[in-house]
Length: 122
Image (cartoon, rainbow, N blue to C red):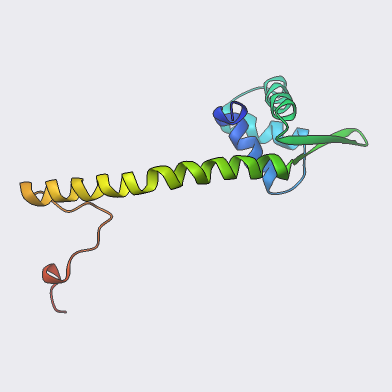
């Protein structure tokens, strides 16, 4: 989880997750998006390898990176447990915020659809 706490590394995993990628392509993408050097990208890739999130293999003169599915499955299980724990609490908080807005006469939340009694006939 520590390895994924850094935005550059999360982005690298996203890029690699779409399919095996050469190190040079990853360095170019991360460099363009985050303004970091090729050696900095190499350090991030090393952290991901050491954490077991990605694997690399030589292919001619390039190094190819791929995700380690088992490691990402573990991250997914952890994220699911967090969502399962917090989802009911966040739903309850949303309900209380909406009640407070209605009581104060404020506007409804932006993501809420207008209620039937506020819709006009076309």
